[in-house]
Image (tube, rainbow, N blue to C red; front, side):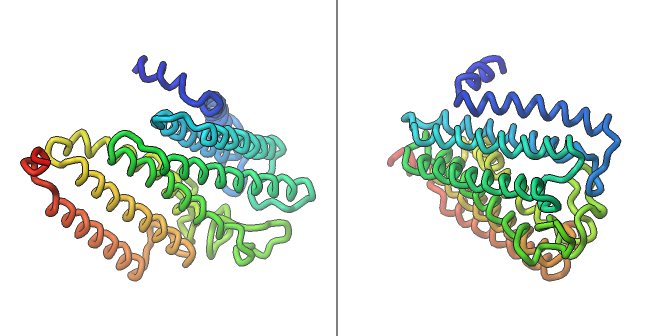
Length: 309
């Protein structure tokens, strides 16, 4: 553990400084959730900065680790990562600043100042999207370790972009709830701030676009973790080529799940109350994934052929 932490300290410095700052903010926000009685849109006012700071800790740490895997240093990727830090600081400054003012940060256009701050957050998110895309392109152009690691990093970065894209419907004109000064919404079919899942806050009475966004964003961690598990538990039975193909199947399924959850939300449907159409689509995704994974395993290279090659 100590060795890992020492290595992490030498990863992309701005990202790791940002991780440290977000970790401190997460602790402060957790204290705020417990100590500050204020409630905003149906949840403790400090819950949003808590969730965002934890998310940024995971995101920035994973990005720094991925950059450390590059066999050749890329100034382009490092500058893109620094841009991500800058826009992350801007976004968190707005979120925390609005909490201190006792108002919302997202979709808030109730005053010129609030509208300007929300627009600033939008520009920051756009900058993050572009910088993340640049890092993805750099990674695809460099050879990374074995094929499994390459797939894990590339798919994780790509699916995270998908997770960002599926959040765009939150600010579509038809997502405006018809309330003056509100320029979008997380929920579909019900007002924001209604009954929600504990801690996460996802609506239990209507659709919630944060679900697909959350799942997609955490592909950055899920795919590398899956690659590690495949190597640890199946490394002796499946060759590298087969494990890479299984990871590609998992990436396709993960992307399908992200889109399915977003589609369910856009139809105003709570996560835990899917209708027959959603269940059928989910079953089709499971069956297709199982068939594809089975085909990969059946067609795997035999050990003697791998040795001969």
